[in-house]
Image (cartoon, rainbow, N blue to C red; front, side):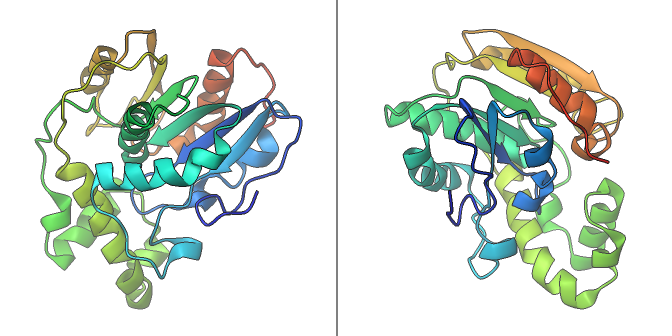
Length: 252
């Protein structure tokens, strides 16, 4: 499977379920590069590459969640020919929710489950500092505090010239998002938070329950906002448990 939206998908003809993975702000499909070799044969990793990053660096990033969800739904439609689930971390979780809503609007197949990590329930208003509006010095200081951008990138002016517009667009996508009421999804939700994530505490994760008429679980894992990296084994093990699969091969 080769596609600009799915640049590094591992072909597994025996896989019965696709796992579409959506990254956090500023990140690309390579965030999930180790998952392909770690997941059991029943699952096919489909790491989504959003516009403006890695092999799509020449494309402008999209700073509106619903616009991006519409484009993504159209791109993924040919790959919805078998069961699938969607995982999203932070910005990716918001996009996963909007993608499921967009697929429903188009009468396309729905995910068997949504895995939503490190993002407040969508109907809760954004009530923090708007990072995308900060001046360059304050913006970079906030990136350093959030620990999501490598120090080597923050210290390299040439790399920051490339990364900053992408990051600002992604933060704008999250910070200007306004929920439009829709009927709850008929999809089970697995919600995850980091125990040291002050920006996304459990109190703003629990209300995801309002967005499904199926089941919802909430797990708090070790780490801060990017527990995706620091608690990867715990995260993927929990995901497999919800899919009733008990095989996970962690690569160090």
